[in-house]
Image (cartoon, rainbow, N blue to C red; front, side, top):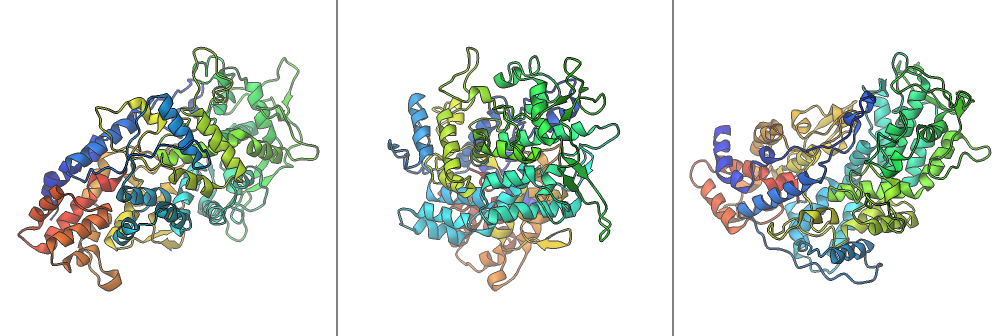
Length: 635
């Protein structure tokens, strides 16, 4: 049967972009490593990007071209409406359309209902809609049906699953970090996962989440999940001074909550010569200033006693472990020596790098750090930019963790030779202020994004008329390859055959509920490059192993031949009950691809299922549709 499937794939799926994974291009990652900072080289980067975003542009062009060559319906939605001058309508559209006008940009058309429902389901919940949900939505004539659907998805448990995975990636929740030599074990990881999940379920403001991760104290990381994030910055090994841990924790805070990965570099050396040409702010910032940030951790001590009840290693965090400021007394460790300044200054006091403030009277050092970070507008900028990039595949500042604080303000432009860093600085500022005004509400931010006309633009565009410079202006949707968890959950949903997974004694059905990407044991999930939340970030790249698992792995193959009846009837059995071949083919397209087939696709499919065993031919058609480009990408 597999040989027959392969022949079908060449004949039908390849015409519709079945070879997408082979065509997918290298990321062209452009990251800078410093020879003296081998521990903090490119493997520590969160976002591997082509220098001009060429992967996203080329991939979008390939996917939309393949969709066209397959005969898929290319009926565009209506042209985007002219944007009103009132910012209250949707502030995103106000600033985006303003940039279109300034740059003579003609945006893509508006998504059709079929495109929109599939896109927003995947982005908000990590799975495709059912055929019934698509049909009901398309038939709905309510003017605000898209906004109503968004509210339904934001209130769903699947939204919690999808964004627990996202923030698990961002916060690097893992049972161990080999690069640092520290482990919190499955119990610590699961407690951290529960903390994230609970915060999303309760709509906890994001600044409160961040404050808890930076500042919490406690004696048992198995019971108090938020402790595990600061523990995850512990550096262990022979000859490692405590300052290495404080520096790593500080670098994590700056990267995760301020979007400034270059502070990690500054904790090794002055920026001049190392960040020259990369960061205007960084090239003029000194190591001593960076030490002032680490000094907020100088009273924090990490202890790891053994839990007598389980014999497992707990983590204990105290802010009374040390009483001095940041000492300059090291010659060993993963960073260059820390020695007295001018021969006399032997410690560095805590001082927030952007305003010079320190702890208030009676305030703990680390708690002061959390207060200063979460009250900094840069905290809001970084948060909205990370979320924006999740929906648009590209940040307003991109990569999202390489903010240059000296190149953000259009009212205070950088000197000659430098440009403003955000592709739309007014939009970034407006989103940040709106996020603050709305109490750091993640759902509010997502609601604003997906209800915007900007988000609802198509990915399709006449390639002869498209200007690649418009990518960063968000004039069309940039496609993304689905996460492995999204692919697995969407296959299970479409086939009506649930998956079953077990982690640390807990059984669950959704791949999106895995608490840690590195422990996803099945080759199917690992083929989609989920990363390990330590040295290897989640990657959007295509790879030949993805094509191989889609063609051969039991995660798909077993679902093609499964049976069942009634509510548990498999997709194959549902198809077999439909005697009219046109209706049966239409049902498969709606179930797997969330749309009707084009006339060309209908004719190809009818030819495929003619002759031979009907059951086997239907399986071949299902296999082909699951391997089509428009199943495996969000466009």
